Image 1: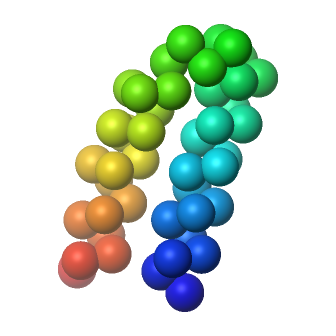
Image 2: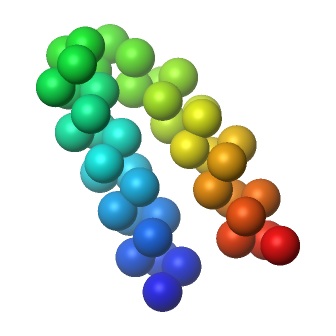
Length: 43
């Protein structure tokens, strides 16, 4: 289940980044996901 959430988050980040900024901000968006999602999974 955790893997599905992480994969969905990653591909969602790619999609939003591509749609809004042609993926120029993908590194920053992925960092936001990592900072938010991974601590929640660990809790």
